[in-house]
Image (cartoon, rainbow, N blue to C red; front, side, top):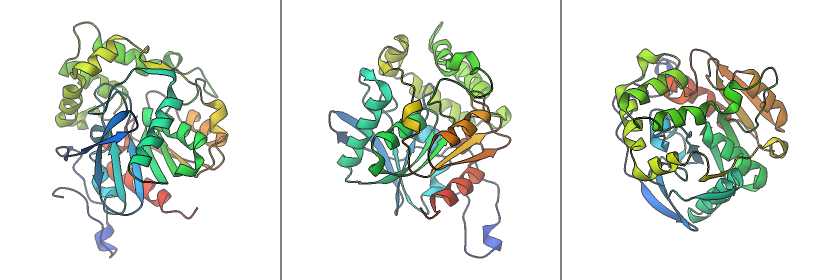
Amino acid sequence: MPGRIRFGKSPEERVIRPVDITPLPQPQGQYIQASEHAYHVIDLGQGTPTFFLHGGGPGCTAWSDFGVVVPLFAEHRRCILPDLLQYGQTDKPIIRGPMWNYHARSMVDLMDAMELRRASFVCNSWGGTLALCLAARYPERVHSLVITGSMPVFYGPLAPLPEAGRRGRNARDVYFGGEGPTRKKMRELIERLEWYDASALPEQTVQMRFQQSLNPEEMALAAKSDNPRGDWQDLTEELSAVQCPTLFCWGLQDAFLTPDYPMMLTRMVQRGQLHILDACSHHLQEERPVHYFHIVNSFLDQPV
């Protein structure tokens, strides 16, 4: 793709060159019926199936979170990007009962519909908590996990979590409250909570998120706060059941959870690793896509 990094076989061709972090237009996806829910899925590349699960911020979709970095991964593996339930172009049902159990079961339904027995998962924030629950409850379906900026438990090892772990939900309420979504509010939210270098944030990223946040169903869900998202679920017990290799890849300046938090998570799963990347906050894969790709792809290629 024009403007994207390429990796050749010679040392000279493997030199890291600057990469354009402006997202490309979203490619055409398809709708896949997974039990009672229809998922919108983008499917790129060939090889080992790898799901990319996005975060839960206003206007987030699979492409808004991973569109910059996925072309790099698609040269090496099959990249499957579903919009999660209640986001993007996927169905937006009311979820009842433990929320992560519901999402994990539905993700298994999607894998079954795609005839995929097992896959790896690369995840940001909301999507990572979902994937940890999936790996705990359905270990035979998960080969390995990469988790960035997720909050599966409601406590920290060194200090209370910012805003009692409600910083994301509070930001969502502010964004959708008052006069409602605006492009200015979206830029301010991303600059304050998701990116380390606000000056590098592409306007196309802001516009993509803003336009999606205007979706009537998404706005209706936001107006009901947490009620339609299911019962909030702490995964302390589930983490000890996560058997697959798990990389926690974290931004040193993450605005939600400081690096002591993923260090705790690394010790709670059975086969955890931790990488802290400097000069980035909550969206490593957008802000520093080349470094993120090298770190994550080498982890995924490790022998089990």
